[in-house]
Amino acid sequence: MSTQTSTLDRLQRLTVIYRQGYHSDVVDRTLQKIIALENAQARQELTAIEVRLVAFEQEYQMSSGDFAQRFRAGELGDGADFFEWSAFCDMAESLRQRLQLLEIKAA
Image 1 (cartoon, rainbow, N blue to C red):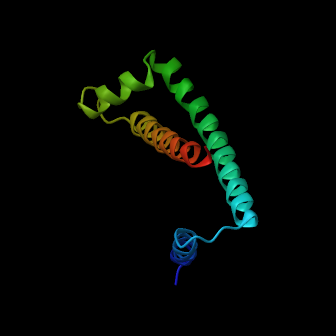
Image 2: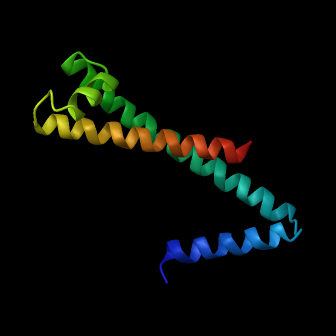
């Protein structure tokens, strides 16, 4: 069994017992801390990626949003920089979505 599978299994078991009325302050605090740590790590990763995005934006004099739209439409060619920029755009979006979920869960 992979680590991811066993983690999901443990989380599902906690979900089941919590839905049955179980409550633990220790579990609640631990989960809050885990979410806060994940949030901080995702923010740190996003900051590093945004630095890279700004460098591309300055070099090519275009926002990442405009770039992504034009790149996906096939207007910019297939240079290595553009594929790298596109990958950073995708990673940034993925991290923003993760942060949005973490912030909802933390509330």
